[in-house]
Length: 400
Image 1 (tube, one colour):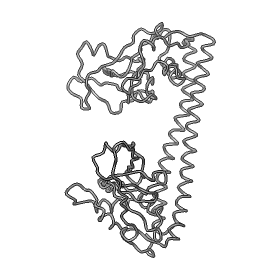
Image 2 (tube, one colour; image 1 turned 60 degrees about the vertical axis):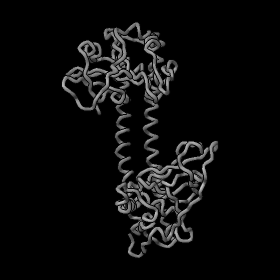
Image 3 (spheres, one colour; image 1 turned 90 degrees about the horizontal axis):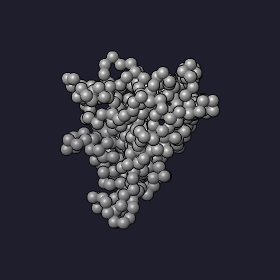
Image 4 (cartoon, helix red, strand yellow; image 1 turned 90 degrees about the vertical axis):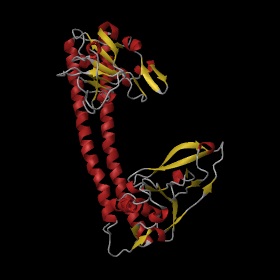
């Protein structure tokens, strides 16, 4: 912090704001929430006045500072944007208005994103009946740097210009990845169409030798004696088998034999609350022990004399992206489902095995390029994420 700037308590530059509203049954109220670690306010689900236990709600206005009593110690403090004006919070979310002749609300906005601000909220939350809730009077004792108003606005403008450049760079990187993924999927569509024109389509049930649902036995994180590892949706969602966050269950010998996965099996997500996940598939690699699979998935076992599992998975991916699988999705209690019977009737082109292998190699090459871009995006995203804290540190240190 600049030695030339005085430090003042928030209570000197903000005042409590109590715009009390008595909730009325039949009236809908917009609700406001506050994210952790300075990530800002957001709009929660609307609420009927007859559905709340609170006898009083408090209306916010743009520029207000809103605090989550329980989670202020974890940076749950925000400045209300114009888009959330006239939302409501309970007494658990005390509200303060800035003295605009002394402080710019955007100055506070950026301060709420700094570790030093969080640390003060944490320190002032302790010892409150053992619940670590911050009282409004304690929040008002948080100290902040206080340059003149014109200097606040100059620094805020500089912060926001630099933050805008960071976001623009991040967006361009993400756009490049999305465009590469779209190109890869477009090439997959071209392959599907070309092979269909040349070889027609075969129904899956003509080239399947087995298909079925997985185990509904309860799984545990800790492996018990005799426990079998079970692949679940998270292990398939990337359309490659991953072994993160494995779960285990005990199966009878009969079920273990029925549910045992073989190299080349394909697992398809058959039901989930996210439509984007339904129909995702992955090829099972070779395992050195028995693996089973959960009931939320379908196992397809193809005749490998006619079709390569890797090629079959690419064709299933095309059907999912093209929306063909959506045609036989059903919604049940918020879940989307893919019917095994309709899945069997789906058609894909089946060229000779040599051509299938060539296609897989070609698509793998495109996929490797996309993966390379994703890796670069992740690396640069981490670097960019570190830039803003550095900028804020300099800004509130009087160096910007």
